[in-house]
Length: 338
Image (cartoon, rainbow, N blue to C red; front, side):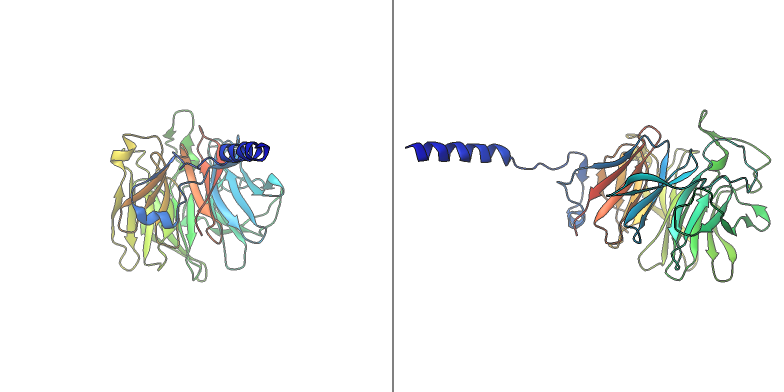
């Protein structure tokens, strides 16, 4: 009788400790095809908090670390499992190289690695693409890759993506001339270009070509796996008409992949940074958090991280890393399905 009693107690305790795991209520699935990538049970991990404006996440396979920037504090930071968050490169995007307003969002933003493993940065304050060795440096010396289009200084390069053959596609809005107090762009003679460009920089010939000058405030940028299509986020801050655009790289024709106007009327957030999954699906910041959009323009899922700026994967796409906005200054991680 005693044995039965104690066995009942043990089974009761085990039952209490093995509650069925529930789906994450912040993950909304609209198409079952994305279940092969997204784990509905996965919980958000917070890797960093109280970063003034986290942006530009980039996975560094060499050190098994996440690099990201604090745009306002002009710093590149590093996070990994063993050391947590540490300063990595500072200053990152405003060294006095180019004239600017001297305030605002002047640090580096988007980052990437070249074929040799060097770090390439979009520098708001210095108004250029610059390159530096991928190592910790609190007194850095950058080398300029490109700082002008047809002799006129760039606005403030924002985000970039490398092709397999080494070309760099990047966006050039004017956030280096953005007033964080009024949330408006400042009219100034320091700006030499009267448009926001999307460009291709050929690292071999050192030539810069214009992909588009008609995107109203371009931001995040990504390449399809076959590299025939360039995706660009049109933020819609100026005309309240945000979109994800697709550009055919053979003839540079463009069309709307996803219209975000309806979502922007319901949720907080902008079409900011993006990353392309090996499946071809677009993971992008947007109204309501992070949106997953198919190459055909269908909204597959929404993950409510709050207002975010950008996202990336590690090399094996085991985790999704997400950076938050001013009112959500965190760096998140979400486990994906292998």
